[in-house]
Every structure is written in structure tokens, then in C-alpha cells.
Length: 241
Image (tube, rainbow, N blue to C red):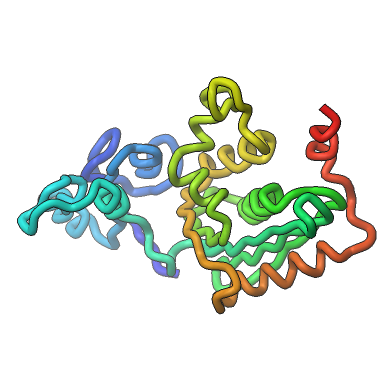
């Protein structure tokens, strides 16, 4: 894996050049959660300085070519480490009958090595297994890492990328004034892990030939069919409230 030693933050909490990504004094702390952050990693300080002198103006809603949508401006604003320098995690989860016996599957690609993780519960839901897969995958990383996580769950990807889960947490896990958010135990764990790692969530269409997603789906099917699955204690307890 290539090493990027200089991180130029053109738009963030404290713009400048940083020699490390993680930590309170690193570049991640300047851009994580900052709307429209603009940053990029470089091999030399000279390249980083050149980027700061002439950064891309993609956070602006207008360009010489005319108007661009706010969604596109937001999507294009951040400059992340390339996938070659990131841990890749594929996840999937499901439950037979929803609710019913369910399982999760995870494939982690790190430093050229591939690892697989899977498990399940005797009574659970699709969404709980999708969330659990993400949690298990991120928990396998021993140190703060830059991660690209692929999931075929819009529930998970939108919950993180659109800020829903953070808003629910800030509102005491209330989705609206009268409705409680579902699965707060798992969302809380996932948000904590996203604060530890630099995680980019990407939605991938299920059953569409993506090798990582297909392998996770196989793991889910095997786990869901096990006769000795343990209880999802939080979910089962919630059914009696």
C-alpha cells in the first residue's frame, strides 16, 4: 500500500497541511462531519501546498458551466484516500420471514489479505442483521483505519450518510416527537465506530454480480439455516414491551 504523508485541508475546521490523518491533531478531525469539506492526501508537501493555493471550488453551487445541484456539490466536495489505501469491507444481513432466524456476513480486505466473519440469531430482523454486519466488520480493525464499506441496505447507508442516525441520537433516539427510532442499540454502536474510523459507506445493488456482496449473501444463508442460533436478546426483549 502506498503511503500518503501530507494531508491538505482546504476547507474544514482548521485549514492547513497535516502530516497524519488520525488523532485530534490530524486531518480527519478537521474534516469529519464538516459540511462540504475539501481535502486530499499527497506524497510531498509541495503537492499539498499547491493544492491549498488552488483548491477545487466544488463546494460552490455555481461554476462556469452553470448551475449544479446541491446534492452533487455535496457529493463531490470531499477528497478521500483512494480505495487502494483503504480497508474494504463488504457486508450483508437478512432474516427468514423478517422477523425470523437471521444471519450476517462480512468480508474484510486489508493489506492484501481477505478475512470472513459471520453469525446469526434465532429471532431477529433484516435491518438488525444489516447493522450487525457493519458493526462486526469495523470491530475487526485493531487501529483507526480509513474504510470503504459496501452494503446493499439503503436503511444502513442512508441512515449514516444522510445523518438520520446522528439526529436520532441527538434527539434521545426519537425519530419524531412521538415515534422512537428503531434499533437504537445497534445504531449507537455503529456511530461510535464511525467516529473511531474514517468510514465511507457505499450502497451496492444486491444480487447483481458484486463478488464481495455475493459472498456475504452466501454466509448469511448458511448462518440463517443453523439450528443452534443464539438469541438476539435485545430484540426479543423489545417484543415483550
